[in-house]
Amino acid sequence: MAADQPTHRQVTEATAVAEASMRPQTVPVNMYEASGALVIVAPLPAVTVDDVTIELRPGHLRFWSKLRSAAPRIYLLREWDYGGYDREVELPAGYGAGVEATLANGQLAIRVLRGEATSPISMHPNGAS
Image (cartoon, rainbow, N blue to C red; front, side, top):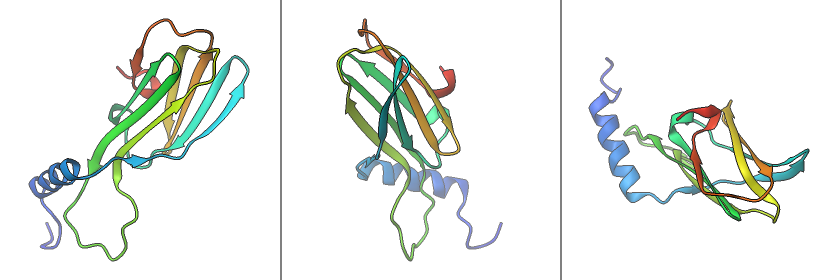
């Protein structure tokens, strides 16, 4: 391993320190109505389906992910992190009967099904449990 490359232990420790001190990044979303569902799309670069949790409650949808990696390095310009995302959106009346989600190519797409919410739902995209 090259001298300037961090070890796995250094990356793990740097990630723990960063996650303890950081505030999650707010994620921009696009939301539109489609046939039988409300669709919410958001960019989530550098996370996997197991990193992302989606929670549907009556009137609200929240999704978040943990910090993926924080290698110890000196940045010349740093405008975003690998994760530590969090967003909650208020849902219009008539949506919340169920939720489906996919994460591909750094984009999270969530479908909130038309109908009244029956109970809270928590899931990962792509049906991961």
